[in-house]
Image (tube, rainbow, N blue to C red; front, side):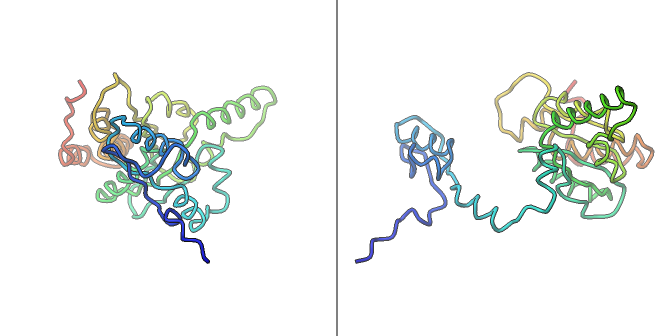
Length: 247
């Protein structure tokens, strides 16, 4: 006699909240540590806000069906790789981001296309690794008279235009690579006191949302003499940005 099918064999979304959770603490391999713990807390009566967890099976299926481009793994380890090239022609800029802020960077790429600006998006998973490499290159030159060019310098020199780096951390993090960037460099970060609000509201407050990234890129082009100041002012007005808000 055939055994009944496992009802969870093809279950990809596990819901939790309102005193009930589909998962449990014993399913970390399936739900990940955070997902399993949220499920367990819910089942124990802890007032966890309702939500859901997508299983690790979904992640594995995605990775299997979306192969990593050749050479990218080494670039990820070294701390910088081209994530998405510009989808339009025009004045060029380079946008850097990583982690959750990348969604804002990608949205800024779309906004900039409306202004006739072609933005290449780069992922920078480790500014610290980029800095370590650059310092090692400087040491080699200092002690031997020759050495390789820093990886961050070499890669960002592949395309023209100013560089805008957005981070959910303080500006000091992207600033770690500032002196090796072969172009005008602007860093955006969440400097200031901690606040409790939605992520969208906080990013607008700290001026790291897509609209501020786009304005920073336009302003960098204006400083380079590529765009008129009026283009920056129009974007500021269109995006509802107040120049006095952070004063």
